Every structure is written in C-alpha cells, then in structure tokens.
Image 1 (cartoon, rainbow, N blue to C red):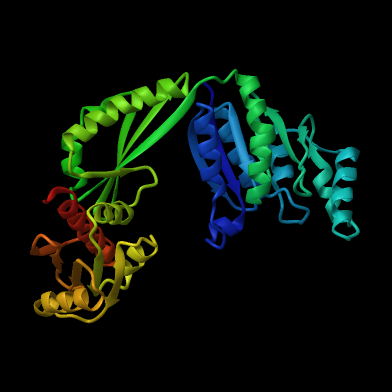
Image 2 (image 1 turned 180 degrees about the vertical axis):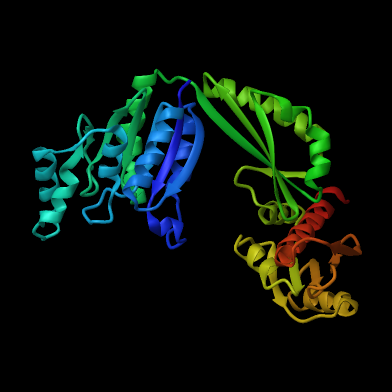
Amino acid sequence: MPSAEIITIGTELLLGETTDTNTRFIARTLRGLGLNLYRTQTVGDNVERIAAAVREAAARVEIVITTGGLGPTVDDPTRQAVANGAGVPLEFHQELWEQTAKRISRYGRVPGENQKRQAYLPQGAIAIENPVGTAPAFMVALGRAIVISLPGVPREMETLLIQSVVPYLQERYDLHEIIKVRTLHSSGIGEGTIDEQVADLETLSNPTVGLTAHSGIVDIRITVKAGTEIEADRMIAEIEQKVRSRLPEAIYGIDDDTLEGVTLRALAERGWTIACLESGLEGKLLQRISREGHSAYRGGRSLQVAPQALRDAAEGLRRELDASSVLGVVLSPAGEGQVVDLVLQTPLDQEIRHLSYGGHPANAPRWAVNMALDWLRRQVQTKG
C-alpha cells in the first residue's frame, strides 16, 4: 500500500496568520482511500526550502501532495520549487494561459503579464484544470513518487482533490481498501487509568487503538483498515464492545458527540430541566451549555460566589428560573493549587463535591467544566 505526505506552503501559515484547514481535509480524504499518511509539514514561501522538502518527501513515500503557492504573484513559489526538486525546467502551456485569461475576463478584468506565471509548469507535468479558480494544479513524477500540487484556497483545493486527484490515485494504485476511524469519548477518569484498562488493545496492529487526553476528557480512537465498509464496521464494533465493557460508566459518546449535548439529552429523557451557576470559570460552563440550544437548559448566571455560599446561591437560581435541577460550580483563584467546589440538586437529592486541581492554571476552567458536566451526566443516567 502506497504512503503519502502533505506539504502545506505559505509563510502566512508559519506566522500563524492563517489557519491550516487543508491538511485535515486531505488527511481525511487519504484515510478514506486506505492510504497511509507518513508525515505532514509546513514550509514558508522559499523556493529552495520547498524544493528540499519535496525531494525528501519523494524519497520516503509514493505520493506527495502540496497545497498553496500557485498564484500569480512573486511570492507564489511552488511551481519553480517543484521543478527544482524534480530537476527539470518550467515550460509554458499556451492552453493553460488561454484558460486562465478566459476565467479572469469573466470578472471583468484584463489579465496581466504576472498572470502568465500560472501557465508555467514543471517540464513533463500533467496539468489539472481548475474550474473554480484561476490557478491550474499539476502532477509531476519525481523518482518513484508522484508530486501533486494543489491550490491553497480551501474550496479550490477540495474541489480538485475530490474531482481529479482521488480518481487518479484510485486508478494508479488500484485502491480498494478503506481506513475508518471511530472515536469513543470518556470523562471523569484519567488517561493513565484508561491505559491500564485497555493496554492490550493498544498493542493491536489492525485495528489500532490510541488515547488522546484533553482536560477531564480522554478520547479512545479505534482505527481500522479493511476491504469494505461493512468489514470495517464489524472490526470496529468488536473492539468498541471490549472498550465499553471495561469502561462502562466512563464512555459518554462517540465521534461528534459532546459531553454537554449528551448530558442535556439525558436530562430531557428524564423530563428534568437544569439551571447553571458558575464562578471563576470565565463563562465557559454557560457557553458550552447554551450553545446546544436545548430545551432542558433553563439558563444560568456567572457571578462571584464564595464556596460557602454556593448551595444557597444555586438554590436561589433554581427557583428564579423554575428549573427542576441546578448545577453550581466555583473555581478558586489560581495559586498553590486550585480547588473546585460543586453542588448539584436534582428532583432526587442534593449533593456537594470538593475537587483539587494540580495542572496548568490556564486549563483549570476547562477541566472544572468537564468534571462538573461528567458528574451531572452520571447522576442523571444512573440514579433513580
């Protein structure tokens, strides 16, 4: 099975001025074809650095995909860089110039001489017509590898990748396998504890199992390569069942599920409503709950509340908003160690918790919100 690398090109990416969304889209597309992605990297608008990156990637893998640097300006260096990397000159394509000039004229503009740069491709390259932009893309051989250069504008790149590149790769490499991923989301339990429970699964070669920790949440990623989607689903389901049996209460959802969304749905299933009171969380609890737009959420307040006054303040808010339940969270100021005080009142009972946080202070609000939501979720799903 061939492997691939992605090279995104643009100094604006290195400076953090532009967010790279192309890598994620390309990676997911390659995954869907069953291709192994070996490496991704970003290179600034420098001809020699791009050429070196292309040469090095082509020595490792069979497919190198670049994005960006195909425009008409002086700081669009990809064509020359790829030509240098392949050791060939640029050559002018009259038909590409005519296509480019025609598209520019549709905008009521007269194409300038700088636009002609887009009609030059590395010698021997195969042009990829761009029906949604002015910059043609291209493919050129470099040793055993094929270098595919696409525009950096996301919509243009996505269109050319799906319409032109994917069919080419499927035919060239006789691609029939798929790679499929399912992510199980867990909360309220640490990465180390989860690792102890699923360590044997993490040693598998297909499917593979990996962990990614976020403050108070751990993702368990199951990745499988199979000949058909039915086979992939079967293989994933087998591993998922094992994970769920070992972590029965910690798993709260899969893929696009959110902790707040799952919790609100659980409240609604019981016919309960919730109000939220937060202090020291920078509005993060209320933001996450409210953006779900769920009818189970009656509203909330962000106030300065002392831990000893939390219970009374939460009960007052519950009555004010006519909610059946209330969740109150107070995060102490950053210092030697931070403390989270919680109160939860439901139609069944009222409980309080006192948690200690020892991580980076900047992550404390997110951790506190996740711990509070997980506590609420577990109380709603398991009690009564």
